[in-house]
Amino acid sequence: MEETGKYETQLVIQQEVYDMLIYAYPLLDNFPKSQKFSLVQDIKKSMDAVLKYAITVNKKYVKTTTLEKMDIELSALKVYVRLAHDLHYFKGANNYMEFSRRLNKIGNMLGGWIKAEKAKSGNVLPEKTYVCAQCGSKITAKSYEYSMRNYGKALCYLCQKKYRD
Image 1 (cartoon, rainbow, N blue to C red):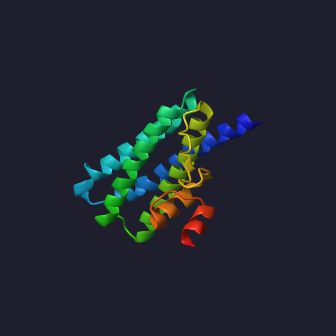
Image 2 (image 1 turned 90 degrees about the horizontal axis):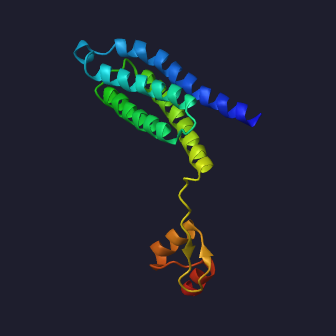
Image 3 (image 1 turned 60 degrees about the horizontal axis):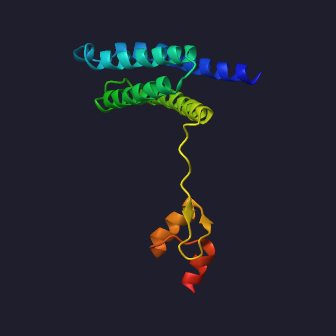
């Protein structure tokens, strides 16, 4: 049953990308004629590439590389869309906001999928361990950052308290 759920999640991303295309193509028709063969084409090519990667990754056994390529293409697409917004090519702020919302939703789903695939394949970077400079006990990253900022060295909570007194 779990495998079915994973497959459905993969298809959800593909459907989200498809829905984004359906939403975006009419918006791109309203761009200035001067942009029809430049920025509009770049946006369409990026959207098409994201869709192609979504389809491709569903067919592959080892997915990490394709997912990372899809993530790069999605990042480029976000830049193109932001550029179009900054150049005032979208008719109304709501069009840009909805387009961005769709891109972010796909990005969040994609990020989760990449994380899951890396965990499955064992390609997750190990968490950095921090040690108190006074007593040698393990400390959290948050404690490490706080103590470095306030005391100039890695200290656990108890040693920070002693250092203050």
